[in-house]
Image 1 (cartoon, rainbow, N blue to C red):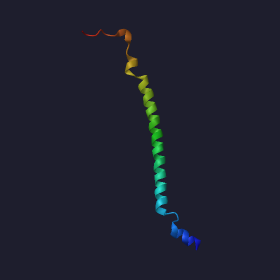
Image 2 (tube, rainbow, N blue to C red):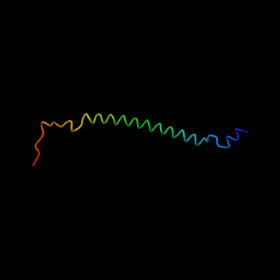
Image 3 (spheres, rainbow, N blue to C red):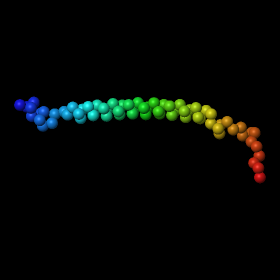
Image 4 (cartoon, rainbow, N blue to C red):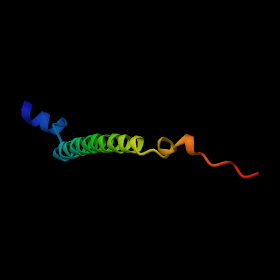
Length: 67
């Protein structure tokens, strides 16, 4: 009798459980993508810092401004 009541009152809905698993997997996928993009951004920032235009200007060989 108790099992029948539990099923009738609102035991775990298979559709809700399936949706919850799908959403948990989606969150895990998005977290992994975020970590990958952060690592890629860090690598690109490091390369950009090394090859910065401002770092490559030789201040001793400046040309005079036109007046």
